Length: 266
Image (cartoon, rainbow, N blue to C red; front, side, top):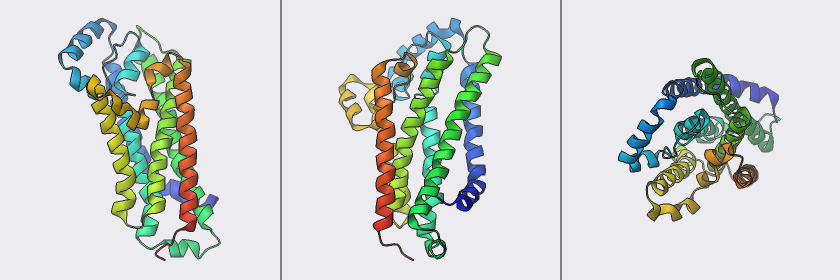
């Protein structure tokens, strides 16, 4: 790993990271501000009147607590999509653009090896994902504590949900990382990883809409991230999160190995 390159990439990409943190702040504050224990029955009626729409966005679970409300309306869709988009953008900026623009020749002319380059860019990506998850956990916890007087969040359960969130984004990020490690052209390095992630999200939405499509749950890793089960402390949910982290680690390793062996347009 190159500490100099790591610092350079963080400085080059921090504005993008800040933009996504602002978006998360906006959506999180809006959702938390909507919480009202007396409105749960009204939301339940609304969900039953439009079951397909609510189900598609992972919002069909009835919220009985503040934590249920947050996991239902934030962790089912919003905190999946936006950090994933961040991974797509960062992977291209960290790896894809160097290959696409022919800049790898200049980097590899230095003492920096391919292994060091890929490990450094991986650390930048993981740093960004960890920051996003920690920020979401911290902001939601503090904002809910300051604005919602009628209820409180079980912090241990909420921490478990966020560990799961980090797991699914490590996996989605590893797909983008592998894609950029495999392809030279931007349309492929972006399109393959981003396309897979989008397909997984659409499959998850479709499988939630109707029981007829439940079998599709087996075709997307998003099934392994179950915020409600994590907040309830179910053992199986933690096993799934472990699988997410192990799968991400394997894909990151495969990406590094293939990048070392492939021919680059230098």
